[in-house]
Amino acid sequence: MTGGRHYFDCDGTLLTRLDPVADGDPAPYPPNHGHCYFATDEDLVSVRERALGACAVPDSQRGEIGAQPWDERP
Image 1 (cartoon, rainbow, N blue to C red):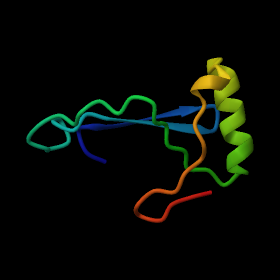
Image 2 (cartoon, rainbow, N blue to C red; image 1 turned 90 degrees about the vertical axis):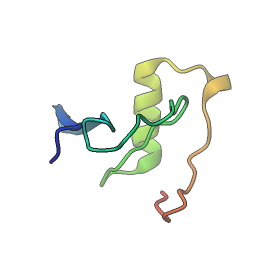
Image 3 (tube, one colour; image 1 turned 30 degrees about the vertical axis):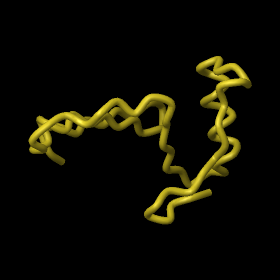
Image 4 (cartoon, one colour; image 1 turned 60 degrees about the vertical axis):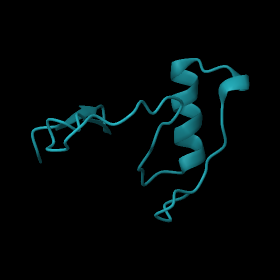
């Protein structure tokens, strides 16, 4: 763990926050609005639906589950 990474156990779900400058990067990252990344051993579709429901995200703002350039995907 580094000074810029913070982990919170939210009833079995791990929430991770990153402060790039405190983590040793020379500048902050640009905002990453509209993205949320999940790592889970559960069914990703179910986890996503629970998260979207908890945050009351309107259907019009719900994106699709996508693959990342480093090949992580559902």
